Structure formats: structure tokens, C-alpha cells
Amino acid sequence: GSDFHPQLSFAYRTRRRQCPVHTSPGISTATMAASTVLRATPLFSGLGAGPIPLLKGLLRPLKGPALPLLCRGLAVEAKKIYVRDKPHVNVGTIGHVDHGKTTLTAAITKILAEGGGAKFKKYEEIDNAPEERARGITINAAHVEYSTAARHYAHTDCPGHADYVKNMITGTAPLDGCILVVAANDGPMPQTREHLLLAKQIGVEHVVVYVNKADAVQDSEMVELVELEIRELLTELGYKGEETPIIVGSALCALEQRDPELGLKSVQKLLDAVDTHITVPTRDLEKPFLLPIESVYSIPGRGTVVTGTLERGILKRGDECEFLGHSKNIRSVVTGIEMFHKSLERAEAGDNLGALVRGLKREDLRRGLVMAKPGSIQPHQKVEAQVYILSKEEGGRHKPFVSHFMPVMFSLTWDMACRVVLPPGKELAMPGEDLKLTLILRQPMILEKGHRFTLRDGNRTIGTGLVTDTPAMTEADKNIKWS
Picture 1 (cartoon, rainbow, N blue to C red):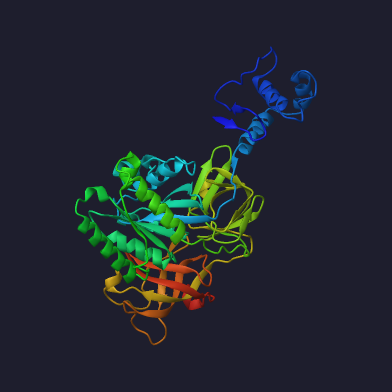
Picture 2: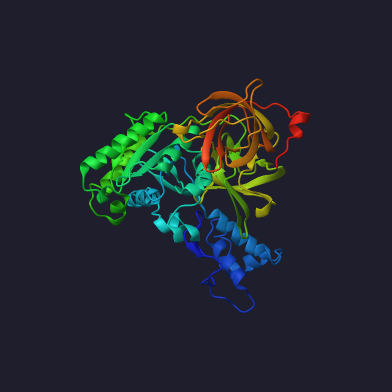
């Protein structure tokens, strides 16, 4: 591909075509390519009229594989450097399936790209898995970046389909605020409520609403009714419904550049509301770094990359790390850090990043593991927690449950089956009740005091909790049956 090296005054090509240098008999193309690179650098520009004698002296000690490594190193250096000149905020689009979350994400990048604040991403580029394109729905959370005049954003496009709520939980875990998308011709639907509820449970405090597809509704009273329903839902779930900004528009109009009032201007109003209503959180930079792993990729010629949002601390290139959870304990070294294809020397809490790790294969790692500073954190199999059991009206269970009930716990980017143990003397946990529970996980996972988690049973969220203690396992705990 074509690359631009920050220290060189020309673009150069790698691998795909022969370097445009006159080649003499007996001198390889690789040698001539290296001579071109060296001649352009200040260090070698004054060393003789021609590069050939210089190159013969310089390159004679190099064995066969050395030059490709040299060129690869130059290609790595050609990455743009991420400049931290604005506050960084993580936002995401949530809402019911087919209400236009991905279309709105594409419209935001299109409008900001015109002012240089983003790279335009088409709908097809955001929903980029073959199954997503075939079904027209988002399955895994997708990430894009953009900048307004005031801030730099990492934007997560969360899946709305009911079957993929597990992936949506992973996507919303690191959000500082979210954009709730509701179609004007439908109003709030089942996943609208569930997504808002999940966002509240995992600590997302700030919401901005975009009422989409306003071009499909002719009656203004219908739009007002939808706004009223949304405010009632927000208030019911613990948000400030009356103060939440609600912007009415059409993401498709913005993408297709028609009806500026519903299209372009509505998206600009939305971005202004996001800038003012979603506050920049205080990041914990003092504690050792902790990165919940969202995805793992293998990059040919580079190695294995893990992605996620840095939960806390500062991560630097060259830092030692260990991967914990799912009965794994693997040590490695971070050899590179990138954020949206830009290189970083150090990443801070809140950054949505990719970390290149040394000596590991893709199959060694998986989503749900946590990358941490060695010795800074331990997995736990037993936790005590304050748990709120959702009522039937909130979408929770209709009936109470007893001790040894087995839901699935979601925290950070992992999920794990667990057994619930009720307090002594307590026989039933009722929907709508707030109580102290002991939870025993099937495998030790990363959980600390103060960590939030969600409990789900089947396709239903049944509770939300906060870890208060991490006691040791007893012999009785170890003998619990899981089948």
C-alpha cells in the first residue's frame, strides 16, 4: 500500500510495485529501495555522490530477512500519531432494532467529515460483518471516531436486536453517555426500554435522545406524543426525563443531503446537545492499568492485538502485562498501542485502544479476559454484593427465586454462570427487592469491590448489583454442583 513517512518528504510504496529506481546489473531491487530511503534522510544525504558504495558498506552485514524487517519497521513508523488536544469521551447509540442507530452513526461521520472532524463511514462499513449486511442489523458493537470543535469522541454503535443483547452489554460497558435513537413512526419499543435499563445498570448517567425517521410521519402531534412517552420512560428508569435533550430529525435525510431542517441541522443540534449534556468524566489515572478485552485479532507480520476501553490507569508501550480470567494467567509485553489507526506512546483511562502484545497467538486469548499490570489484581470466584431484583414492571422476573438459583453474571466484558446464595433465614428473593446476596461463579473472574454487574436469566435482565466484598471460597462452596 501507499504510505507517508513523517521523517521523509515523499510517499513510498511497499510490496505492491517495484521501487522506481534505476537498477544496475548485480544490485537487487531491495538494495536500491533501501538506497532511496537512505539518500532522503539528513543523516546520509552528504555521504558521497552516489548511494551504491555507501549501501554496500552498510548492508553487507545484513542477512536475507533483515531488509524486509527494516522496511516493515519503516511502515510501522509511518502510522499517524494520536494527538491528545481535546477531552476524550466515549458515547454510543442505543435503541430498538431498525430504529436507525447505524444510519445516524454514518450521518454523524458524514457531516463532521466535511469539516475535517471525521472520516466518513458508510452504513456498510459500520455493519461490516457478512451476516450483519445480509440481515440489515448490527450484531457486534462497532466503533468509529470523530471530533467536534470541543471534544474527541469514540462512538460505539450498539446492536439493537434482542438476540444480541449480550454483545450490546459488552459495547455499553465503557460508555460515558449515550444517544438513544427512537423512530418517530414507532415510538419506544421493547428494546428501547431494555437498552435504557441496561445503560442505567452499568452506570451510564447521561442520555441524549434522537427521534429519528421524522420524515416518515406527517402528523406533528404524533411526534409530540412520542416525545412525551420517551420522557415518561426516562423518568421511570431513573433519568431526568424533563431535562433530557430530545432532537427530532431524520438520519437518512442527513445522509442523502435532503430536507436540511430534518437532516443536516438536526444532526448538528444533536452534536451540540452531546457536547453540552454529556459531561467529561473524571478518569482514574493513579491506579495500575486495567483493560477488559473486547476483541482479539491476529495481524499478519505484526502479531496479536487485543482491543477494549482502558478502565483505569495509564498504559505505555513496553509495559509488562498479564491476562487473567477464564482460568488463564498469561504474561506478555505491550509492544505497540493504537487508537483508531493512530499510534500512541501511552494510553489513558477511557481510551478505546488496540494493544499489540508479544509472543501470543490469537487462540491464546479471548473476549472477557482482563489485561492488567502483573500482580495488581486477582480473580475471585465468590463475591458478596448488594443486588436489586427487577420487578415485573421493569422487565424482570414475574416470580421469586430461591437459594442456588443459577443466572448468568455480566461484568466488564465477560459473562459467567453463577449460583445465588440467599442470606441466612431468607427463603425467597422477591421481584422489586433490594438485598445482600452471595454469588459463587463457575470459574474465578476479575471482580473488585465497587464493580457493577448485571444478572440475566434467559433473555431477561433480572437484577443489577454492586460488589461489596470478595471472601475466600469455603469447602462447601467448592462442592457446589453446576449441572
